[in-house]
Length: 417
Ligand SMILES: NC(=O)c1ccc[n+]([C@@H]2O[C@H](COP(=O)([O-])OP(=O)(O)OC[C@H]3O[C@@H](n4cnc5c(N)ncnc54)[C@H](OP(=O)(O)O)[C@@H]3O)[C@@H](O)[C@H]2O)c1
Image 1 (cartoon, helix red, strand yellow):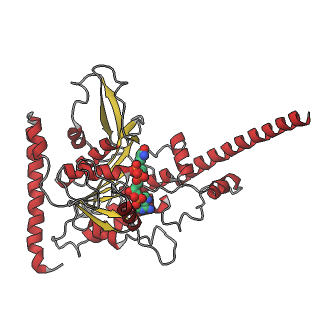
Image 2 (cartoon, helix red, strand yellow; image 1 turned 180 degrees about the horizontal axis):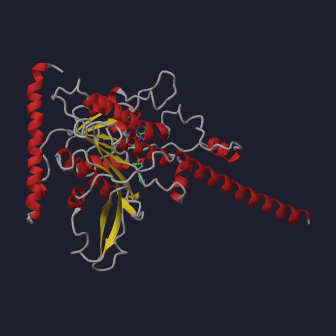
Image 3 (cartoon, helix red, strand yellow; image 1 turned 60 degrees about the vertical axis):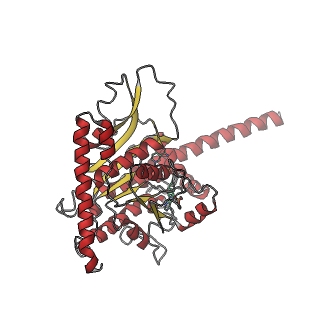
């Protein structure tokens, strides 16, 4: 970076941080004294530092961009070139909630066209060699918070399903042939993209690059899902039909918790090297919730439970609710509220009996109250997910085959007398 520009840039970045932090603290104090409206106005930091959003074109991503803009935060979005083309051809071009402007045209949204990963010359991806695309690095540079709300959408091919069912191999963990070569496989998108994100953060935050004139990436907010129960019916079905998307989402989480992001095993000084994270495991995401099933006096609210939140039952949550949570997390982290906190949380709707005791706190209080993960999570659930899913589909195929054989023999008896 040009040295002549570095001092003013550093000063403006530092001022924006200081001002944002001051307002966040002021807002919090006022709110505790009951000045909710004023607090809400003040709690929106005036910083012009954009939040990087990866997956902005998805249903949750679109809501998240809208929620950030609503809070006065500019957005830098990495969008695949093919999706930019698709959006250009659409009449309403993926209108954002709120002001109804398409994501490509919004003055507060900067679009960077690119893929998440660098394409390897060999055509084969591996954990050791995977790299972020230059566009991903460009998207993150100058942001302090990144919201990663993308997820692979690849469906399992019938030939892949058939190969599991007919497999006589004793080792279910063996990779499917496309696992390391297909650029849109969840192993690349949900898992290896996290390794690449770690490398991008390291590059941006490295001491060489960080002459105090570059904004550091301080925090990653990542959306995954509950994935610690490989035998659960949702896990098995989503893994079976979606190329093991849940398994690779879980493995992506482990990257965030590991040394790739300066985690507890990295040996780095927490205040120097690490990047904070909030992993959000939402319930089943829907567009709307019916309020009809609530009894008078009952209220539904979004409960947050740290340390993975495995004991919080899965319930439907709306995308606007989760987008609001992601935006609030980004605002808080950008203002330095929970900087370098390392939290894995479940976010589910729960019903409380009365308005007063409904939550005991609002969403911002619940976010502020989150503590860094303090239990150990399994490093790998590859074996558990793969064997549970393949076993389920083998049994399903055997059951279907038995029914077909029984039906054919019955038909044969009827026809032949
Ligand atoms: N649906 C649920 O109930 C639920 C529950 C828990 C967690 N989740 C997680 O939340 C994520 C977001 O949900 P959603 O409803 O917003 O999904 P969605 O509408 O399908 O959006 C998927 C997003 O991921 C991006 N993406 C897909 N493949 C990609 C690739 N190969 N490279 C780069 N970007 C890619 C898409 O970009 P393009 O526009 O370029 O395709 C899009 O922005 C899910 O993927 C899942 O991991 C979902």
